[in-house]
Image 1 (tube, rainbow over the protein chains, first blue to last red):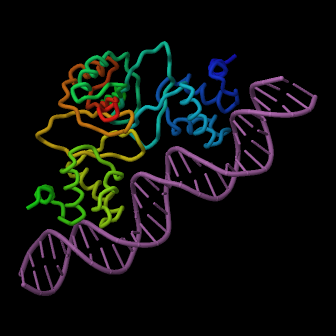
Image 2: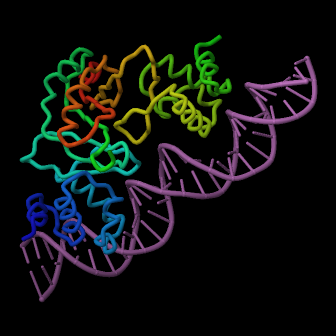
Length: 136
Length: 136
DNA sequence: AATTATTTGCAACTTACTTGCAATTTATGA
DNA sequence: TCATAAATTGCAAGTAAGTTGCAAATAATT
């Protein structure tokens, strides 16, 4: 059984070709992806655009993927991996490619920053921007 | 002379009612704002929506405002204040209101994180999420 | 295998934002 | 200060990412 199929079953989602293809794509790439990235694949030829969007919503609701901020107008998503800690991304200022950074240990200091203005911290989002090796 | 008018002249932008109204609104509020916020004001009644968008672009190009990430589908902008250092925002998870946090001293550790994956840091974006005093 | 529940493809729709153009307003400079 | 040039505005129509209704197809359940 494919890994994607196991995940779908575990999350009680019907196993369809569209979903398997889409989820395998996320698993294979293992980085934030938007519909733009998926449109480039041959898999997309066999899948309706609305199915893509509907399945992305289902995956997000099921906690399989999460949305991440982007440098363009297309929403990006990445796999939620339980064995991976909360982490951040670095986006190339030149080519806009996105890479995952290793674990983040910043919540403690952020809690302090939040409480200074009377907020109770529930989470944070951090994106670094830089020039990637290929563009340097 | 209004403060907004002085800014517009300094940036060599024509001084029009729309621009003065819009910029005064940013100055008065002094927090990230989207077209949603502006639509709530009576000023908006006298101003075309396309003027709002066009002037926001002009202001951004002139470095008067900058765009900030949002929790909804409307783009938000905030005043660029030279006397204010690079800083971040905290967004209420309940009411989605946005507040500015004080100065950020994180670039040094971020540079290290970036160089670990071979990137040269050019900037970063950080949003905290929490529950604001009003919603608590 | 038959029934029920879910998903898919398609086309039409929604909506934040953009754009072309003619009319109006603002800046320029004699 | 007034005529001219340049920029901005209002309006209506257009874009494009994402959504939705519905009937047909596929998957889950018994």
